[in-house]
Every structure is written in C-alpha cells, then in structure tokens.
Length: 463
Image (cartoon, rainbow, N blue to C red; front, side):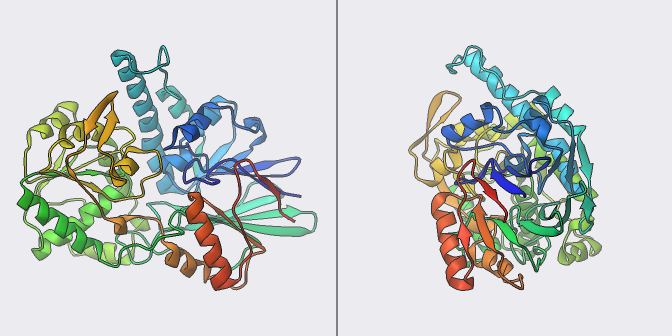
C-alpha cells in the first residue's frame, strides 16, 4: 500500500517535497528549498528525514527554486536516480541551480568579508560543483506522455500554465490488482495571461494534492497593464525611478511583454528599461528556444513581427560594472533585478541605493513569502537589514498583485471544476495556514469535497 510523506510545503509556501512510497520503492515529487522564515530555512541544513538512497526517481513540476533547489543537496547525500521534467524546465534548471549555488557562495563570502555572520566561517548550503553534479541527473519528458517509472508506478505531465515548462503530475500507483491515481497540481497558473497557456483540464483523481498559495485571496480586477502604466506615469511625475525585485523566470518576461504593448499603444512614454539579472538574461534565451510552450496570442504576435523580448529601449546589465553604472541614474528609469522576494542577488545592491529616497518607487509584482525582505516591505517595514546594515525605507512601496503567476481561489475552484467527480480527498499544501484553511472551506462549501491540510512530515496512507 502506498503513502504520501509530506516533506515540504506543508503549512508553508516553500520547500515542496512529496514522497510517494511503499515498503519497496519511492517516488519524490519536487525537491525544493525552504525560503523565508529562519525556522524554515534551517530545515535546509538538516538531513532529509528519509534516506535519499530509497528515492529511485524524482519528478519535478517546474523550475522554481522552492521546487528544485534541494536537488544538489540530495545528490550530495547519495541520490543516484533520474530527475524527470519537461524540456523547458530542464533548460531553466541548468540556469537556476548553478545560480542558486553562486548566490549562496557569494553571500557566504560577503558575510566572511564583513564579519556579520555568527558562523566562522560562513558556508554556502552547497557550492557550484554540487549544482553541476545535480544537473547530470536531469532528463526531459514530453507533456502528455505516460512514463513508466517501475512495474507499479507511472506518471504523466500536463501543462500547469504557471511558468515556462511548468506541469501538473498525474501519478498511477499499482498495488496488486488495484490502481490508485494521485494528481499533484504543482503551482497552478492563471487563465488568460500573457505568454502561458491556460492550465490543462484533468478529469479524475482518487487523491488530489493542490497548492493553495492564494486560497484566501482574489487578484485585483484592474488589468495589470493599466496598473503598470499608472505606476510608470506616477514615477515620472515623482522624478525618481522604479525598482522591481523581479523573478528572473516568467515575471521579467511578462513585464517585457506588457511594456511593449503599453509603449506601442502610447499609454507610457519611451522609458528606458534596465534588466540587471544575469539569470534573467539567460532565461530570455530559454524562452526564445521554447516558443512551442507559448499560447496562441503570443505566437500570433511573433508572426506579426513583434517580439516581447525586444523592447525598443531595453538595456542589459551583463557585467558588474554595468550593474553599478545604473546607480548613477536618478530619474525616468524602470529597473528589474532578481531576486523577486529580495532574498539575494543584485537587487539587494539596488535596494541599498534606492530605498532611502522618497522619489523612488519599489514595485512588488509577485508573491512575497513570510520572512522575506519583500514581505517586510509589503508589510510597511521602516527599515530593511541588508548586508548587516539597516537601510531606511523612504521609497514608496507599491504592489501589483495581478502579476502573480499563481491562481487565486476562484481560478483554483475553476480548475477543480474540471474533475468529473470528487477525489476521495483533497490535500492542500503550498500555502500559509490561513490561505490553506480558507481554500479548504471553499472546496467543501462549493464542491462538497473532503479536505485535509497536511502537517510537516505527515505520512498518509492512500487507502
């Protein structure tokens, strides 16, 4: 009999790891790092609660670090099997995992140089060599193709519409003459958004493991293009700049898409757009290489000779010197730099430089997990601790929540509506407690579904 061991994203938004197993074999769905609160991040340093050698195969739903960032550690601990994912996800992982290692090495080196860490010396969670070792285990599979992992386990990936290459996983588990189907939603995308296709319809499951990030929230009804145009025009009047802590995957490209539209329609002036994220620059190339994953509208736009990756007044900061030169720009500029929750990367240097001025706008365009600098800004922090120093927050903080690539609760319910009958149980994960509880109540009220919110390390038998 198979069970699901919830090793991550239980009662929180990050650290996604789900171990499906019986006495003889096991399949891991996602292998993510914890981010945000210190008590969660400390779990990254603890040994995995199961023996990595018992995991024969890993299925990855998408490339975000909270779903993939633990892979280098798992390989270091003895995992030797295959890591299966879509082709676009694999290409993104080849960028994100080495970048994750580099950021950790960079932060540890900086902490040692400045002496602000209590650890002597400060060490990275893993290094670049570990990241490249993990990449050797990656293997691409196609959307819609059933893959036989063993005599008793098979799976199929369907488009989740969240980011490029993102997927939901249908898992079939054979126990004697009985077959049980478990569906993992991964991170559900939204409907009718730029670039991405809508989430695939799945019609049946015995058990459903669903994200609930926005289980207690609705996205703004105001179109994001209108909101973005308003912020840009406000910034020009204020005489400062806009700094966007932007996720290098999807958010950067979506903003490029919308700004090209706004410029073409005359809703914004010809404002310079700076991308200061080596990773985002590499990710742009992955988008170019995987246009087969775009929606019809984006493909049509390309045929018309318009490419959202070629914004007319685009400036790329590839080198550190180019990054530093952006600091001299005092007004009329739109700057995007990773990371999206301001947990690391070049955006930290820009925040140090831009937060103290009331002329500037810090624009938040995605989910900000508890314990991150992005959440602190969203919650009205008067200062941020960056590189061991307190930086005063004088800039104007604006959030456009419509940019989120996570479905809100109405969109999640819409996706649930594709199931022809209720699963035996809906497990709600990848959400803070309030959001998951709210989603559970809505699923029960609207659909009559039986729900359960797993706790960390719950090991639940699939009867």
